[in-house]
Image (cartoon, rainbow, N blue to C red; front, top):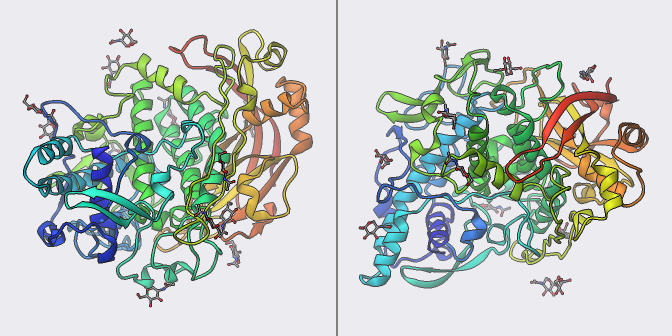
Length: 620
Ligand SMILES: *[C@@H]1O[C@H](CO)[C@@H](O)[C@H](O)[C@H]1NC(C)=O
Ligand SMILES: *[C@@H]1O[C@H](CO)[C@@H](O)[C@H](O)[C@H]1NC(C)=O
Ligand SMILES: *[C@@H]1O[C@H](CO)[C@@H](O)[C@H](O)[C@H]1NC(C)=O
Ligand SMILES: *[C@@H]1O[C@H](CO)[C@@H](O)[C@H](O)[C@H]1NC(C)=O
Ligand SMILES: *[C@@H]1O[C@H](CO)[C@@H](O)[C@H](O)[C@H]1NC(C)=O
Ligand SMILES: *[C@@H]1O[C@H](CO)[C@@H](O)[C@H](O)[C@H]1NC(C)=O
Ligand SMILES: *[C@@H]1O[C@H](CO)[C@@H](O)[C@H](O)[C@H]1NC(C)=O
Ligand SMILES: *[C@@H]1O[C@H](CO)[C@@H](O)[C@H](O)[C@H]1NC(C)=O
Ligand SMILES: *[C@@H]1O[C@H](CO)[C@@H](O)[C@H](O)[C@H]1NC(C)=O
Ligand SMILES: *[C@@H]1O[C@H](CO)[C@@H](O)[C@H](O)[C@H]1NC(C)=O
Ligand SMILES: *[C@@H]1O[C@H](CO)[C@@H](O)[C@H](O)[C@H]1NC(C)=O
Ligand SMILES: *[C@@H]1O[C@H](CO)[C@@H](O)[C@H](O)[C@H]1NC(C)=O
């Protein structure tokens, strides 16, 4: 509880510009904290250990309680400048100069083997800046036992993560209320309880520099938006309820994709990023980057800042999302610790890497210095503990403990463990989010849970799914040009009725799944044809249909015929326009299956057989 308060207080300093909406410390904390010059190199250390032990990053729902903010856009430790390391406003950080033709790029690495490793020092840098502010905030409590308590808690401060793949507590949405619930919150800081603007709700530019956001209506928006309503309007407000609904509808896919990424991909080169590397085995279409893209677009509500690569880091949810990606990376590393960064030519240039440059485990992760003159490299950050943080699942580095955690957290919608687990039924609710204005949006929609996975499973039903300890996993493998439409877009697959109102597609009952392609804002992201790949898992939807009696079984004959007859594709650009499939550059979708052995105990993962392509759903 103290730690979330600190997170909120530090973000209040960093994120909220309006003096009357910030936490009032009764003194000028901004001045006290504004010390270094922006040319200072970004020496990245992480935060110190405490009594020799490494504190955890904690899931945000475990911290939920309080809140707080700052923002001078030219201070190197301002939210604007730290978020700006990623991409927009495309300026040098810490004196690390862009290549002559790299000035329109960010430092971030996408479609790249450095995608997981670059974001690791980025988060550590952020964490260390927040840590230092947190120590200062703790020192502002009046002398006494309270200050002692807060100063002790402050020493264990680490940024939280948002686990978007685990089932949230009953009757909550996948979108934590602390992030999207209320625009204003009570924060009980060093100067007593105060009502402040919730710094996790939105970040307000101070001032907005429209030239940084060349696209309408981004150049009109003074703060970050999620699911802007009405879309394409300068006066749009965020609709966090809509985001919550889309996330809740997507949970079965996020969870099964993540499970499959742990169980079925042990090669770092294909696991780490979405570049399409043709592979005769057809088993490596999905990647952590592609799954991360889908979450970006859902959290942006299709057309908010999170849905556009160059703008996403401004939304405070970005760092919570990426801390989870880093955690997943750390978990995967323990499962597959022999696989690591292999050289790959850069497919997307950055400020310091040109198209075609070799990217390997000793490539500089700019602009993050380990010490003067030496940048961090992937090899140097292979063990995340070098930055003195860890996560509960990986603290012991024990492989069987990681597997147990995966089985516990990520098998609610999967046949991977259907045979052995008493199912649980939960309703997710996107209720409690603020109501129809910026300050109060709201709805009360529950989404489909794993309704077949409830109570004691019906034996005859389970027998139609799992036979001899095996089941067929079905996926749609997708390849597409990331820059097919100058903006982010979604590929939806429907199994059933397609609603007339396209704005409801993302949370429609008959949506089997969606692949979000995270692009947008061509500035700085040159237009070389870049084929990326990803996967939409179909199995949990097929199991729903078996349960409903629409489909006989997951067997090859039954399921293939059913998918051939019923699976429909729809593609929607982030501005809401439905695009003809034939107009989507580079699109190919094939349906594949694998005969998978279910896990017999918590200590093992399901084991995939070879992946066979069954039919092409779309091939121009
Ligand atoms: C992280 O921990 C190591 C080992 O205790 C220590 O050498 C290092 O200085 C710590 N980092 C920071 C920023 O304190
Ligand atoms: C660190 O150790 C000291 C001495 O044992 C103890 O007083 C202090 O509470 C510890 N700090 C934390 C955060 O556990
Ligand atoms: C954005 O802020 C500017 C300057 O404060 C103001 O003139 C403008 O009306 C604001 N735009 C919106 C859509 O609120
Ligand atoms: C926000 O989204 C919810 C859920 O999709 C919807 O019911 C509601 O009408 C939206 N609010 C506004 C103001 O459009
Ligand atoms: C991993 O996959 C890449 C791309 O297909 C391939 O070049 C590489 O040889 C694989 N690595 C191992 C260790 O199999
Ligand atoms: C991988 O794990 C094994 C077994 O736990 C361990 O012996 C080995 O040192 C690890 N390798 C790396 C590179 O961490
Ligand atoms: C690794 O990448 C760097 C550039 O980041 C390059 O200078 C070096 O030659 C590469 N090394 C290998 C072995 O490819
Ligand atoms: C890993 O954890 C399991 C389960 O907690 C335990 O039985 C095993 O001894 C641990 N292995 C090591 C090397 O610590
Ligand atoms: C949402 O708005 C409606 C209509 O303005 C209002 O009656 C209701 O109390 C609001 N709900 C919440 C949770 O604020
Ligand atoms: C939302 O759901 C809760 C719990 O099911 C219920 O008590 C409440 O009345 C609902 N609110 C609305 C506005 O439907
Ligand atoms: C929406 O995006 C699509 C794809 O980039 C584009 O063709 C279309 O013109 C856009 N529509 C509007 C209204 O901006
Ligand atoms: C892999 O997929 C391609 C394209 O769908 C197909 O032509 C090929 O036969 C597949 N390979 C296997 C082993 O299924």
